[in-house]
Amino acid sequence: MAAVTRPGDSPATLVPAPSGGVSPGLLLVIGLLSVIAPFATDLYLPAFPTMVDELGTSASGVQLTLTAFLVGVALGQLIFGPLSDRVGRLRPLLVGALLCVVASIVSATAPTVGVLIAARFVQGVAGAAGMVIGRAIISDLAQGRAAARAFSLAMIVGGVAPVVAPVIGSVFVSPIGWRGLLWVVTGISVVMLIAVATCVRESYPPERRAARRPGRRIGTGASAGSARSLLSWAYVGNTVAFGFAFAVMMAYISASPFVYQTMMGLSEVHYGLMFGANALALMGVSMVSARLSATRSVPGLLGTGLGLNLAATLAVLVLVLSHAATLWLTVPILVAVASLGLVLGNATSLALAAVPHAAGTGSAILGALQFGLGALVSPLVGLRGERSALPMAVIMVVAATIAFVAFQLGRGNRERIPAGLLD
Image (cartoon, rainbow, N blue to C red):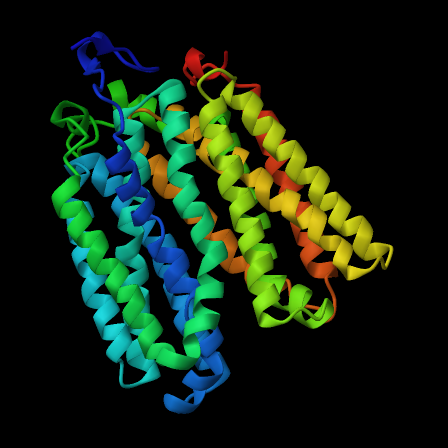
């Protein structure tokens, strides 16, 4: 097996080049690992009013169950990502998956809102292991265009889940209730644990872990290169671009019930169809991105996606400010969501390519930013009430602008990105 030299390597830190890349089966499992958070977040939202009565609490008490989960996800990525750089990917992934199953069972059977809040926090911490380590596994096994393609394909599952989960929840909340919806999340957690135990193998060789252990001085060798790479614009720029592009989607998801149903007057069925159309568009563009990454520059694909996203969000803002018929918003919103198919996978690939010795830590920071911004954006879109799309439009434009500018800054620092991604 040929050895590969990465930025910051000394001759003693050469690592074997991965063979075989990422199989379709493993990609499917990694995609599954990324759906637990959106389903656990969005699936039970329609049941909030019922939960207030059944648990004898307030609306804010129920809201805390969601906040606790999102905080747990952000914190969990910062725990499991660096840990996987030190001890390997598989053991932390198995521990996280098992703990997620236990926490999911406690959530579904919680007798009080206090127990539910605590269980949801643990569920978030544990569920984060799959998301952060899944990205690191791809980075371990594939480089260059192969990694960009793998991330884009994995994002098809992970990117569509936040869009379809609210629709599924609205359909099943009446027949099975909020506990039934949380049992669905438990079922997904069980499938995730089985998939990890049967399909995932260790991808991070011991010789690369040694450079990350506490006994190794940070100022020398690969550890110093890792610290520098995490502060490089190649990493920071693409990570910020990913996080704020995801914030665009979270602003859309959070405001969509008010925009489509309250303002446009669509029924629940038509609301679901609109959500479905946007999800299919995102999936389709993600598949196109995976195919194009074999022949096109990955930064070029990412720049195109961010440019389309910014133009679409500006169109949303112009339509809102001009008091155009709300129905016209469906077109630029569709473009804004679909363009993320060119963004999320490619930004992840470029960010983690810049931190080859610290893929777990790099993935953790990326994921923590993603869900931290999601938690911040979601309540802001309703600042002017349920009949105004202006907060959504402003947040989408601001987030899209930051993502575009950060990418341009990161693009100017290419020395840590493999040449194969730039051609």
